[in-house]
Amino acid sequence: MGDLHPGELREEACELLQRLIRLDTVNPPGNERPAQELLAAHLEAAGLSCELLGATGERPNLIATLDSGREGPTLGLLGHTDTVLAQAADWTHGPWSGQIADGCIWGRGAIDMKSQVAAESVAAASLARSGWRPASGRLLVLAVVDEETGGRLGAQWLTREHPAKVRCDMLINEGGGAAFEYGGRRRYGVSCAEKGVFRFIVRVRGVAAHASTPEMGSNALLAIAPLLERFAKRQPSPLIGEQAQQLLRALGEDPSDPEAALESMRRRNAALLPLLKPVLGITFTPTMITASAKMNVIPATCELRVDCRVPPGVGREAVEAAIAEVLGDAEAQGFEIEFTEQVEGNSSPAHSPLMDAIRRWVAKHDRLGSVVPATMPGFTDSRHFRAAFPECVAYGFFPQRHRGLLESWPLIHGADERIDIRDLELATSCYVELIRALLSRT
Ligand SMILES: [Zn+2]
Image 1 (tube, rainbow, N blue to C red):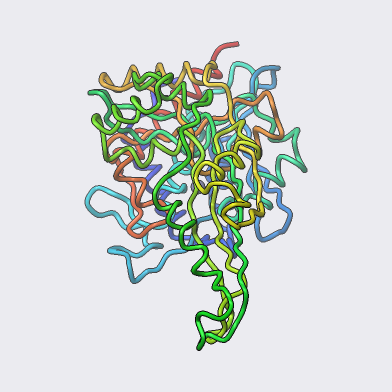
Image 2: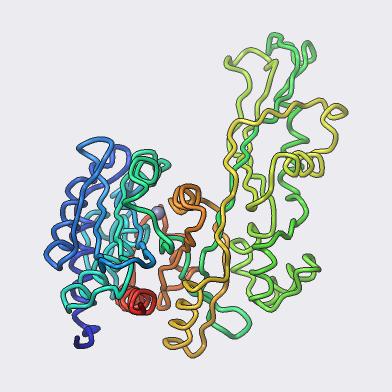
């Protein structure tokens, strides 16, 4: 088997990504079928066996398999083909153009995450075409639908309805890999964990009256103002769990002194702090407020909705303590708390053969590079695989070096989403090497 040519990998990944971007898969409604069929045709022509399975005919998931026929580990490369919406008027190049300009491919999904889907598919297809096969076990390429609205018809459905077909020992998904500078080194985050959600309402009660007599009644909207101000002033104290410890240690900071670590992070890369800080604990973000439904009525209740994110392993009790820390005592302050949504955080161990393979790849390709176990502030489809297959080690890793974390993060779900073609090539060749490293031994 000859070596795969980097130029050919790049060409193939670029073309596949452009074609994927040109298929509008904004979810809702999704309409992913043409994208799934495009990928199935590409992978089948290379020698993988493909199956389209869905809860509905219009939105099937793709399972592409390269099987050794022998007992062994399963490596899955996961991606979703749906995207969030885009307002074409805000874009320099059309969100469904797939245009190449300034060395980048532009369009909705260029980062999140049609680029990774293209890189994973081209890596698997190129290896299969070259005659490579797993020595044991199997390689899966999984392209799922419906991630952007929670994965009910995608990863959740697939892991629930067809566990035997998609069971993985190792899984590579979205959520990490964009490089950042820290302490003179280029760091590549590998997403080992995802924060959970504990959303709640802060409710204050007053007494309704006619708005023309403000001193009659009791205005609940005004009564909530001091609480809103407390949210503006501070977040709960850091809560250094296992994942935060691993991150801090990898960055050369001392996990036993969070305040000193924060200060050091501020000194070493202040621009990065808003992305790193959420890993260190519970966050509160008030996003919605409702009071009177009528212009001329003093509101009798006011409800403030707070989006709260928690590290893996953190439950309701800790959130209640954090609320008390920031707002003070509920009874004394005259407010009520109502929890509306709870999703626990999820994680995979940071030490594994998959991590070792990623570490070796980084060491080989970037003299200044090192790997950092990271926690995503939001969640991805990895949580469905971690829940369905407790033994599965799932990581988010899509290496980007030429346009790093601080450049790519603001483009996710934003205007002018684009990927540097050199990074698309880097990721594609990375997946080729990881597949070989993990599945070539018997
Ligand atoms: Zn995504």
